Image: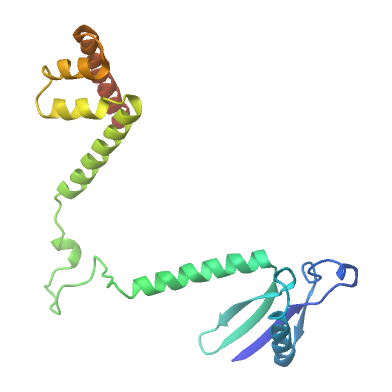
Length: 197
């Protein structure tokens, strides 16, 4: 295993800036020089710190490690990606993964997992029905403050009885409440037509 350290060399014209290493060319240094930079880095204010990433090159038999100096923004992106990879690795250890083509036994005539899976789509249908209902309720709540409650009353079979409730709730006549109910029914019909497209 070989470790290569690549750091940015400060350009002469940029020494006045907060971080003179931002736009510099990479040069190779020894491990000792790199460790000195890391030691000094801890004492610097945040704006002047230097950032490094590790890149591992694995050729199957051996691996080489590159330690590369990057900008703070590049470091943040690299660190975020590494954290996601590590988190996914930890979560992946909690589960077993099976191929649908794995045999369920050792015998030649044993079925593969795919052959045992049912073709019943009831779970998928239940999911989509619930999603449709949740979307309808959200749309009704956004449309009118009484939309959700009126839907509940319709679902309980109180279509006729809901007129008095709606008139009282909205402080309108029963004739106006019946018009609101027709608007409600048109809204639901339009929603379902748009959903099926």
